[in-house]
Amino acid sequence: MAQKKRYWLMKSEPGTYSIADLKRDGTTYWEGVRNYQARNFMRDDMHVGDGVLFYHSQMQPIGIYGIAEVVRTAYPDDTAFDPTSKYYDPKSDPANPTWLMVDLAYMATFDPPITLETLKKTPGLETMMVIQRGSRLSVQPVTREVWEIIMGLGKPVS
DNA sequence: GCCAACGTTGGC
DNA sequence: GCCAACGTTGGC
Image (cartoon, rainbow, N blue to C red; front, top):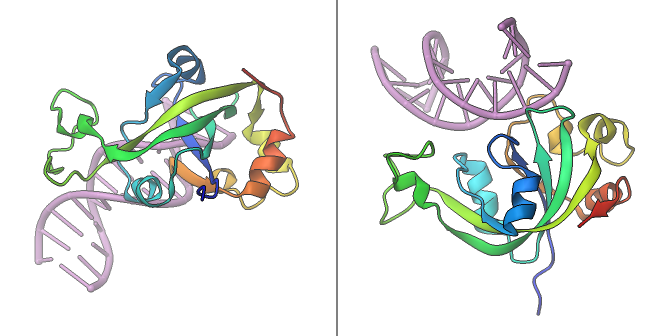
């Protein structure tokens, strides 16, 4: 039986990795998560086929720029073992890796993006983590209801 | 550029 | 185990 599809919001700074980069690459590995709660979501709850809202912080306008899909479940993030990587973590033991990543595939782009401002004023989205002040979690679960409301707010173009 | 919110670290 | 100090995130 197929795993029930879940939904996520994943944040990136466009200067680090943008929706355009994902469109160009087709698939990518989501390295660099260095927060335990975010890691636990990826490790415990993320499955192949899950939907991902691709969110950009640190740009104008802030918001959801596209959709991706999980294509590989969590596996060790080897950038943690690379001293030259900005994600290097000397405390992570290669024999028992602390940090994990997943692979994502490009699905679509929202043009225009669905802005944070729009999310904040759309009924039904009040519980979204990303609109709460001080919400820094880079991997957040999203309910199916929220996902469907957001799909109705923009036109995903591949 | 500022600064509030948050997670992590480390002294005790 | 507590909690102050610190570094980072991210909206403004």
